Image 1 (cartoon, rainbow, N blue to C red):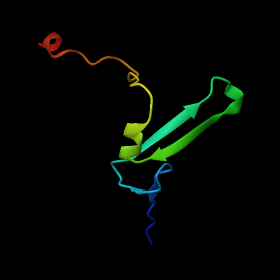
Image 2: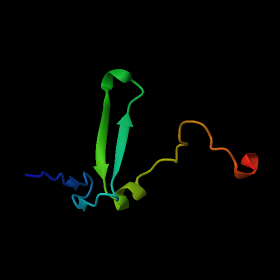
Image 3: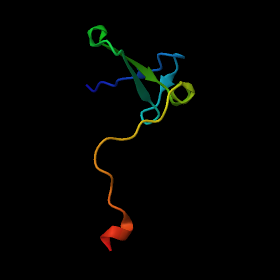
Image 4: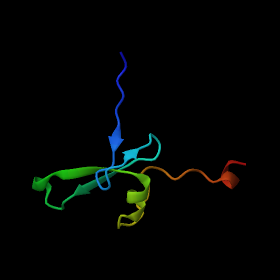
Length: 67
C-alpha cells in the first residue's frame, strides 16, 4: 500500500501542487528561541516580504573562460 503526503499552505489553506510549493524559514537573531517553518503555495510565497538571497557555493565558470 502506497502513502501520499498532501502539502497544504499554512497561510491560505489551499492544497499545494508538488512543484509549486515553498518553505519559509524564520529564525531569530537570539539562537535560544529556535526557528519556525511555514509551508506556502506559490501565490502566498510571492506576496511575502523579503529580499532575494544569493545562492551559496562557487560561481559557475563563464562560457568564454572555457573556450
